[in-house]
Image 1 (tube, helix red, strand yellow):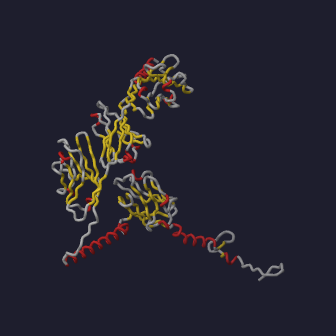
Image 2 (tube, rainbow, N blue to C red):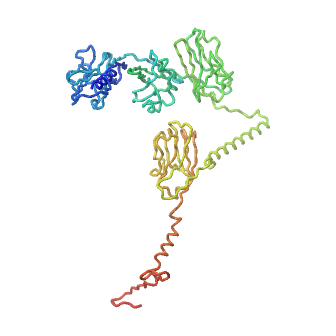
Image 3 (cartoon, rainbow, N blue to C red):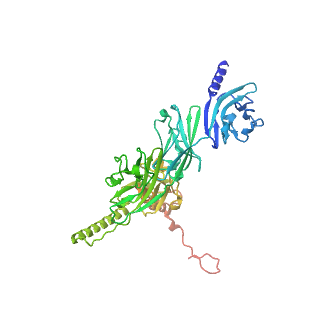
Length: 550
């Protein structure tokens, strides 16, 4: 008995160890955790109180429900507990719409009619500050800052979330967390945290390729032992003014304008970049080693740009591939200034009037060769399915279902499209955007795929009740926006007609069995054909009732 009491006291003392819970003012709610593993008395009373408050009652739960008649008025209609708290031992309290005045020490306790046991003490911090981060259109990434001023233990977990336009997980660490697989698809492969954040306490999040849809509030939640620390970052997305520059035909160079204030500091640096079709460093005033080879020896800035503030870029020998958007970024002390320039190139044409005859003939041959190559490529693309090896799948008719296998080891993005077609190039089954689309299927009631095939990489198709008419070549194709093909495999299905194969033998067997009859005990060779036993019956018109002996 004494040992049991000591164990209960030990459990109570462990849970009474306090923790810190942080929340930003304006949040929907905050949870004050309190989990109890001890013995629950017959008539328990769960009590939440706050220090230096009169009355100090925050929430009270009896066995038959909440008792809030003595609750402090400032918590009216803002507190709640789980309905099954007494059965589950989860005595946690939810406080809605936390305010700065709600900060303080909260105590969770249980009363058995004789004495009150303190289970846990929590220090609630309601922070009014939230950090704003600005990002402009065309930026490659933005950092959402969140730092803890201490080294973090190994069991620390971090969650970056959003509540607008809906509740979603942006980034979760570690990958063993129950919420890791719940990352919103729109942020897949776009978020990253530093690998040494446990040592540095820097749990900032890098968001790559930000768009206008990323504008809004982000909450960083750090679970550190008993502490729950939160920090809010508001991301503001700005569209930048875009200036359009048209290149005239035959121009040797084009100037991409970008000006700022004069007398720039000595440590100012300028970068001209492109993000289409991929990120490219066009020109850098401080380091040209990262310049893309397509622009090497073709770009130039004025040498006195620090004095004049004119950071325009001269692009020599403009080509068709130079058409697109350019971003001028000026790093001036703590300021980051951006300006966007759109370069439009005209359709370039040329005259053959001054070409010699042999050059014209060569040009004609080159054009014909290009046409032949285009036609050949089109033919190869059209008949490409016929050159792929086909996996043989044989099955008897009458079986319940047959599996047409298609598996891959390559990475499949979430927006990939899986399409099964038969030998007549008719769509049999489609799996776009993570959900079956029956409108494009010809066998909607007889085809199905496994759950989440893009993640499992198992794209196999199950065909129910296969018949002889289903025999033929089936093609499994995985593509992005119906243009970029990632996977293509063929399956040759052969459905064997069991009924047609054995029907003649069965018919002959039945004919042999019923065409003759044995009288009495059947004896070998003593059989009479049925057509010799029964006579033909003739029906004639007339009123006679006698039997016709004909």
